[in-house]
Image 1 (tube, rainbow, N blue to C red):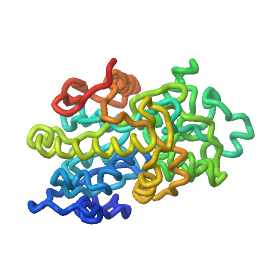
Image 2 (cartoon, rainbow, N blue to C red):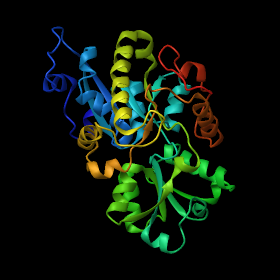
Image 3 (cartoon, rainbow, N blue to C red):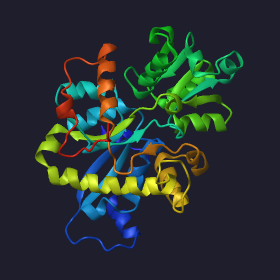
Image 4 (cartoon, rainbow, N blue to C red):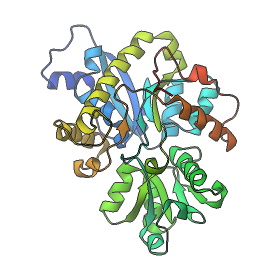
Length: 338
């Protein structure tokens, strides 16, 4: 499965460590595979790899890009991947209901002032009145898959603006590239998609950006996770991964976010943008406009994750019961104050 999703970010931790001028460890590095989506939210992971943070933990990490979150989560549960960091989804929570996965840290948040998931309208639909979040009612709006982060965003918007989600003609187009094609061809009127894709479409005048979900209804978008088997059997590996990952979070936060949580390019911003641009195959100029918010210490908003579980079950997308206390693995994850 891994080979099917390779895209070309072939730098591994061992190569990153050598390139940084740091003497490699005498003990052989332990190979790990990490799954991500090719969005700005994966930035801290690419940074941790390129800056040698994983290698300093004795890990030869390779990042495997995926087009959507569901196959990534399945690859974690099956053992094809060691770790993943991406948005949460119904597929993920179904694996959690089977006791197969554990959340070990936070990834990005949809946060006011930080582009993340955006609503875009086709040029034709924009001219015909699709210009605000509330206007999605009655329109054909694309999201990647049922139970995906964009689907949850559509539910948050419906709750925020007071109409049932059934009033939106949701179209499930399976992947971000398919949503781009659907907007260009007029198959859909609008789409909810990550900033990496939304900003590229706006820049190319292929669609019109309506706004960012986090500006009106913030939520915990993503998490880092591993299989239950690995969390139980190999805490040294999990903790080594987390130390490297958190160093990537530190570098990302310090480059793009002020100490009080506001968006600003700091001294290392250009260096970090170059690393992320190579990883997600986008221009640094576009990525600069779509920096995602992360907590510097990768702390998770527990309350919203619990809400996501309830919402997914209400949509009939999660079978069985999710043991939230087991899913949020307190041996590893830390939480934001409630």
